[in-house]
Length: 107
Ligand code: FES
Image: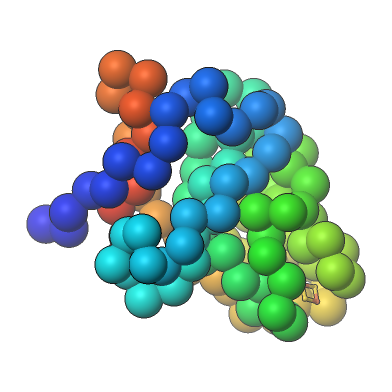
């Protein structure tokens, strides 16, 4: 089993926003973005599969995040691209909320 990492508290991420968690913090090999969408929390690799943009700075809506650079959208659950210009997925990570703490299980 993978080790979980407590990345934030529920109050740290507004609905519709993302939080970038640097690789140095988690020990995982890439930055992770944690998103809040209507009371649900999701985690994806932070770097867009199309360019160098941080998805944590994107727009979160309807189960998707829109890249701030060229507006590709990714499914928050699967990391699959929903439209051009992205054609490759970003990795999705399991998230659990326990006692107002947000845990991510990278990998
Ligand atoms: Fe994200 Fe181009 S960098 S769509």
